[in-house]
Length: 120
Length: 107
Image (cartoon, rainbow over all chains, first blue to last red; front, top):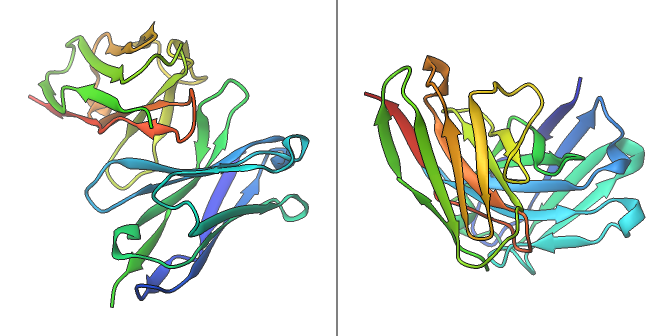
């Protein structure tokens, strides 16, 4: 069974940093591109970014709103995905989901989400 | 960035109704579009990918169509479990962008 479990969320002050993790199981993690998607309270979904797989040099893509502040990485030996968030702003407050890009395209599996609150 | 505009933003319907939700892209995106369902407090769920391909395990009452700039998600006969918020997502280029969502409510 495919599972994605996020962790690392919490309360952080503006300007601070936080590192989210996503533990994957039940599939060959190293084969897949992986995404982060967020949802501010009461708002819609926002795509945050993507890491490609080793075959595609682990290259990354980001939304403009997080470019230069957030970094996506992965450790295939530990089946783990990460989101390093720096220079956090109040508008980064959201539930953060990790998601797998399926073979047929589309984000076919999602974690349960982890809440990040940026507030003083 | 490509803008995705969904309509309507909200919709009231009854069990058994046929419902259509539309997503329009600000430029052509071939068929690089997915549809997602989200229930309160839950992660989104993939329904349709590549505009018209039904994700494994998704009931056949869901269907998608369109290419270029105009896309539709159709639910042929609403079931109680279908009341949720629906989002489109373009994966034609980066940054990928979601529509603003369509909340489907019980009439």
